[in-house]
Length: 259
Ligand code: ADP
Image (tube, rainbow, N blue to C red; front, side, top):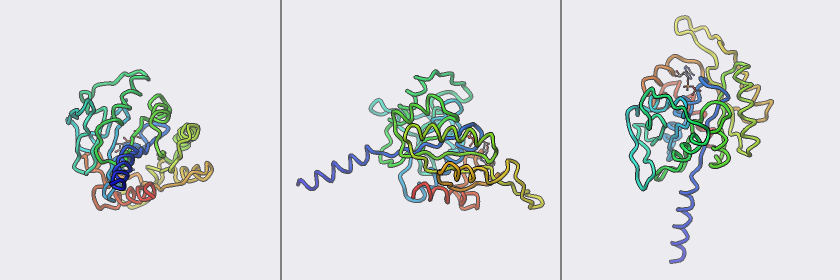
């Protein structure tokens, strides 16, 4: 039946047209990996079929965040098979391919090649891949944009000026490559003292929102600096998997990314 055939072809094409969303930051330590993991989990809880790629090949932290440390991906048809997580989000990380603690001293082309293998893995019915990029604007980012064409990028920054200047540089790189900026997230924004309840702003506040306005990119929201986020992440139990207020902050951002 011609109609049925064309539906099948359409579905196959759709599967092949899996969407990639890059999560990037101008510098390290601003919460890019934390956001990537929670974003993937929140989107999966919302019903999307999501996979997670840890392309931060110089400091892969997703195995710890997603509680898959020590797991090894197998291969099928000469392609890597993602490892399952208990959050319903299959994942692949360079951290799964090297021994824990082993330094990865790769040169540009090898790094780009590694990214290609992670993206071109057996992702099954995943319709969306969240890609946790290394910080900065190096070879992996370039190969991401030129070869793999993400549908958009989410940029993470802390409110500080220095982090923001780096974030602007990251945004500029995506702009130059024609990759749309989905929006900017301000992480580590405001700290509520667990003892006295006073709110302080160790890195300032509102900087990323102001910068988003200046650069005319959407502001996706802020996530407070919260010890509960750090402890949950270290324990391999990202807040977006539960029902805490911390998880709700990530879920709200995921809703904007999905929109
Ligand atoms: P990046 O991927 O940008 O290098 P990470 O996501 O690894 O940053 O975060 C760096 C550290 O900061 C981790 O220990 C993480 O648990 C912690 N962290 C990230 N975001 C927050 C937050 N909003 N509140 C508290 N700790 C956070």
